[in-house]
Image (cartoon, rainbow, N blue to C red; front, side, top):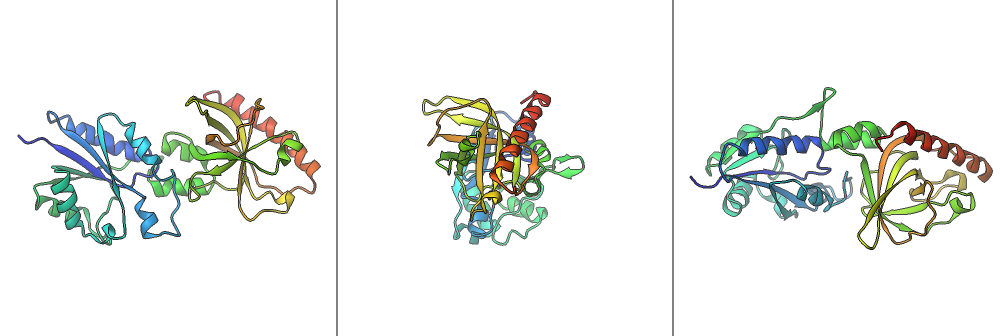
Length: 307
């Protein structure tokens, strides 16, 4: 019997619990066969960045989903460049030229809402019929629901936009994380007794939650390669007390930490919003609020010891 090549296809932004449920179904299916290959075909950049270049937002920065997929045991990850030309291919052309001729796929798992090919308008039955033309079995994977809601990248993005970070954490299987580098800021926080690491995002289109103050962990990636995590409070906003800025800033005050970390890569793991954005009448009022925010952040971690 020829080797089984069991594949799936998608953007997999976030590699969330819904995606992981799909991969688990593939593993179960592959267990029926000896020496089956498990393949994940994904895209760089995300297809939405090509199809909607000015309207796409990401859970994870491009390429970061490749790192998460690479951590899956037993899967071969195949990145494919998504281009405007590729977007014109019909589903049949893609099945024939890519899945059948290049990857030799024998069994294709489709996520519950997965559509591909120009226009992405086909139904599951259409993909199944097209697969049969090339001896390929097409299987519709079951969706994953939490509290009656289907877990999807779209749903998780909505949770992040609305600041529902606990729910986003639950659906992702981890806290939402912002990737970036520490850059120099105005140093107002240091003058107020609360020095902050100003984070420049790796990906300007990565989703941020609403403006406000959050409990977070700052993961610091040392030049030596060592990684360390620190409890911190996070501010996202336009600093309205100072008159506001054209762009939102991401500022992290690390608890019980005093070290210059300019230029270092960081990952901000966001747990929960503690306070919404607020405009203060003076920097003295802001200083007093920062003291309250610090107390609330420390209380959060004391009450949530798993962090």
